[in-house]
Image (cartoon, rainbow, N blue to C red; front, side, top):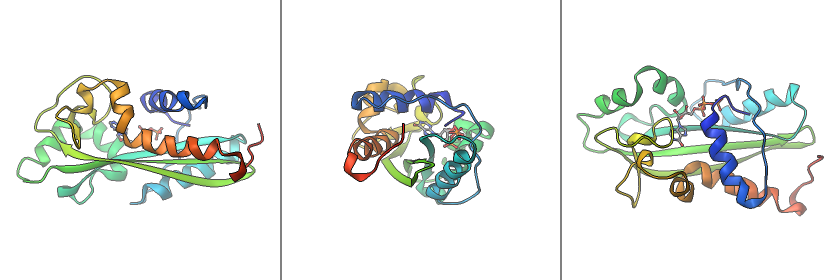
Length: 186
Ligand code: ITT
C-alpha cells in the first residue's frame, strides 16, 4: 500500500525475481509522527488491515543525514515537497561531513499473521550538486558507498543491487518464501 508509484515500481521489480507479485493499493498511509520508521510502518500496516483484510505490505522510508542529526528522516516526504533537493544542499553548505543513509522499513501482515518488519539500509553521502534524472525523491543527491555517481545517474537495476529498499524487500521475500515460518491465507 503506497501513494508513491515510484516506490511501488521499485518494490515490484525487486520482488519479481523471487516470483512474488504485488498489486498497488493506492491509499493514503496513516502516518503517525515518530522518530522511528519501524513504529510508523507498523502503525500504518495495522490501520490498513482494519479495512483491507488481505495480506498487505507497507513501506516507510527516508533519508537520514548525519550532520543534521538524522533530518529529514521520518519527515523525508514533507521535506522533499517543501525545501526540496536544493534546500537540503543549502542546509549542508557549511558542514564538512556529508554522510547519510537511506532506510526502508517494510511491514507485512494479514488478518492472520502478526506484523513482521524487515529493514534495509544503504550508507553513502550527499552530493554537492543535483545530478541525474533517474529514480525519484532524493536519488539525484545521494551517492552510495563505493560509487561515484548519484542514484539519479544510475539505472534501476544498479540501484536495486544495493538500495535500502532492495535489502528490505529481499529480506521480506526470503522470509515469505520459507513456508515453515508462517502460512498466508490466499
Ligand atoms: P507512501 O507514504 O504513500 O508510501 P511516501 O512517498 O510519502 O509514500 P514515505 O512516507 O516513506 O513515502 O516517504 C519517503 C520519502 O523519502 C519519499 O517521498 C522520498 O522523498 C524519499 N525516499 C524514500 N526512498 C527513496 C529512494 O529510494 N530514493 C529517493 N528518495 C527516497
